[in-house]
Length: 121
Image (cartoon, rainbow, N blue to C red; front, side):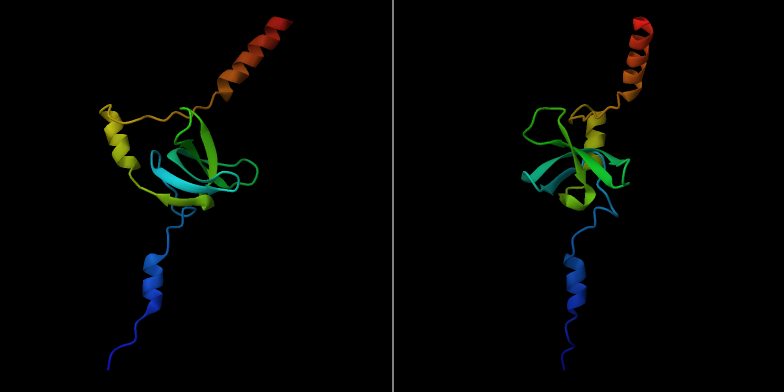
C-alpha cells in the first residue's frame, strides 16, 4: 500500500519567512504592504526600534521616489525580501552599487540649538 502524504511538511516548506524574527539586512530590496498606498518596494537602510512601544521598523528608501526619501516599515508588513544586501555591500566597496544614507543629525542639531541660545543671551 502507498503511504499517506504528509501535508504538514508541504505546508511548512511553503510557509513564508517571518521577517520579525529574521529581519532583512541593509541594502536588501523588499516589498511591503501599506494601508494607505498599497504594495510598495525599496531598499532597506537600517533596522531601528521604536522608542515608544519597542516595535522594530525597517527604514526603506522607496523606489520611484526622490533619493533620500525614507519610510518606516513595521517588520510585520514586509512581504518579500531578495536577501542580496551582502552582494550589494561588496559591490558598493568597488563603487558599482548605490549607497543609502540615513543619518542621525540630532547631535549636531542639539549643538546648533545650544550655540543659538548662548548667542541670544
